[in-house]
Every structure is written in C-alpha cells, then in structure tokens.
Image (cartoon, rainbow, N blue to C red; front, side, top):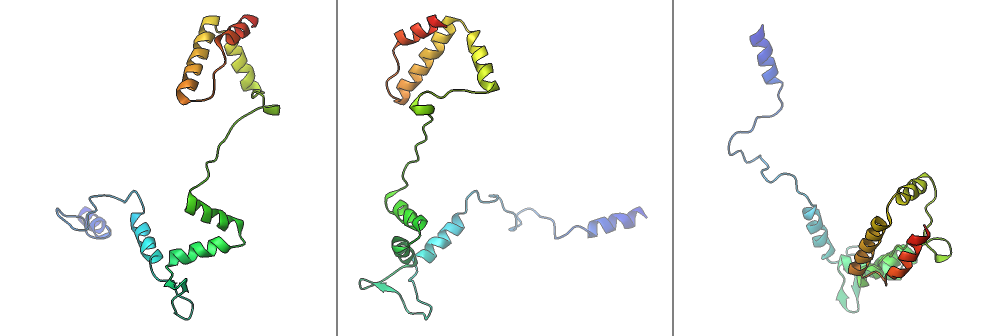
Length: 162
C-alpha cells in the first residue's frame, strides 16, 4: 500500500523536474526592469504613423513617426494635461518645491499631543544640550545651502528666557 501511495505522489508532480544543464532554468532570475517592453515601445514609436486607410501621415514634407504624431497631437490638444505632458517632454519637468510655513508665513506651530510631548522633552534638556542641537542644525543648514542661519546671540537670548 505504501508503494502505491508513493507512486501516486510522484505522478501528481506537474511537469518534469530540472536536470543539470537544463535550458529551461532561468539562471538570471526575473528581470528587475521592464527593459524588453520599453525596447518594444521604442521600436513602435519609430515606425511610420499611418491613417486608418493605411496611408502614411506626413507633415512639412516628411513622414511622421508614431512618437512625432503623438507629440504633435499633444501640442495642439485642448486637454491641459496633454499640453503639460508635451511641455515636460520638451523642456523637462518643472521642479515641485514643497515649503512648510505656518500662518502668515511664520514658523510652523506644533499642536496636539506630539507637540506637548516634544515641548516637555525639550524643557528637560540643559542649556548646553539645546545649544549643541542648535549648532548642529545651523551646521546642517549651512552645508545644505539653506539660507542664512540666525545668529548665536538670538539663540542665547531665547535660551535664557526659557
């Protein structure tokens, strides 16, 4: 009975197991990028653009590629998103700068339990520890090229008021 059950288990394995040197083995693994798809898309983009009846689309006396036809379509589109995409392809994407400021352009106020915990933690630090934190932040700002750092006198005055 055990011989029959083991034969049944062997027969239930789908496909043939790999053997040494089997060409079906994918030694390089799954591709990390979709380079093949990109390559195919670029080949298609370089083909001549054709109308529904099969005639080649021309502009200014030369045959258009599919990529050129798409870009020309985007350039004259009434859809603002397509116009934006055309400009971004042509001149590059506009940087999206994120700047956090508080009300009326002032500092950001921390509100809520996190702010209370942070204030409580900072109140337990010595003046020397706070000065070290401020100096490290100013150094990081200078090395990152972020505006002029406030003077040390201002920080000393603020620390003495706490």
